Length: 545
Ligand code: GLU
Image 1 (cartoon, protein in one colour):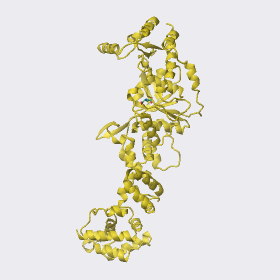
Image 2 (cartoon, helix red, strand yellow):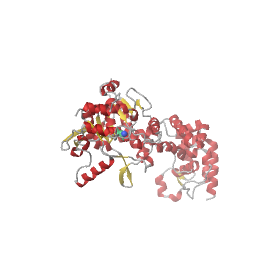
Image 3 (cartoon, protein in one colour):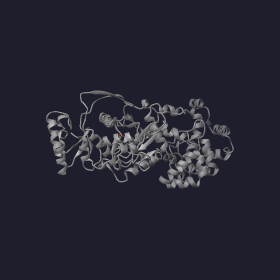
Image 4 (cartoon, protein in one colour):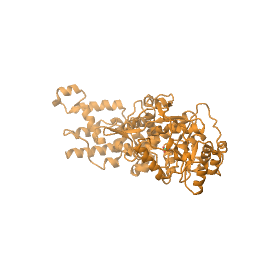
């Protein structure tokens, strides 16, 4: 068969492969620089699983001084949604994942949207046809269905291969005739693979994987719109774009034999592959894949609404990417952390929102009061306008509130999100404090008179923490609250309680809760006027008990 003639017949007006290749010169990057890519279909928003994939790709390229590119794989136009690409870019931007080259960003290796690269794929397909490595197939869906049924009956593998590859046997004149009568066709790979031959591939994450050669004449170019299949397009693109590492979900591992074969058929070096494990969820004891339909935490918006900073989600993702990252982060080391493929989990890692929140608490505890304030302003502006007004009107006071047990050696770790802050500190704001009148667990024997006298005679804002506590102990002791717990335990009837109980009363009076940060700080911040109002309300409340 004259393959060149066949190629010209099928694709008369197509540039040559060499012409295309001349547009994509080899990249000049330093040794070891990785060119990675995130290659989603334009299905709109990015969910946690794909965010993780994108993030790994971007981290690995940036830490090696390479390039991270975004390629939109829209050859399956059924999966497309309107403005899908914009949605992806927006999510990546929100997560501060920098795209060096790509759709809507530009670069020298574009276009980065596959549907705009038709001519390129045609040039490569034509080249393969001219070499006898691909051929047209005119089988109708009906014929393919019949083939499938025969293979099922014969208990054979299902597919277009070996003696079943009917169209591979067509002569040039038969093809010409079919073309003349306007029959539509696909282009199939003329597979040179032998299914009885096994090979071993070293995947950068999974390690050794064993596979059999592919002998299926898979479709390279579809009939409907002249677009390539995903398999073929990715091989051509990764070759021309100079991708060095394909880092993608392990659902693609089973396609690896075909992909390696495609690079071989094209006569080019394949990139290195790293197949990463999916993100899993423990759903009441059942471990399953995190689902973008079922699980709200799979959506990136979930964290925005909750007020969990992007940096925290990224930190958490880093703990999923490399098993040794968390230890490094908690050690507060000043050395740079380098991500590596061999520390990526080989099987699915659990996505645990509680764990993410604990990382968030650690993260918040390391922020300065100004940083927390700034983040809170941005968050409340969008999600809690009432609180936004309060904190912007009382900026200095809020900064001081946020600084309670912060910017010290062992800071408090109770904030896990911006939405926590109002719940944690609502009592510091009169408008919230006086809007409801319930106190947590008030003991029957609380003594309002003692409290009043303490604030009238002893408490002053001038005292240092030590002086304050010394005086408080002394006052309480004179009033029947012993600082000595043992003494109290031995003869409880002799006392009103311990110093701790006296403090508990003050805490409840000021915060309505039995738990709060440092009482001294709270007293100081609230100041005499607010204290007085709270004292009156508390005494009134105790009298109704
Ligand atoms: N377009 C494929 C997807 O939708 C990308 C697979 C790959 O990264 O090679 O996931």
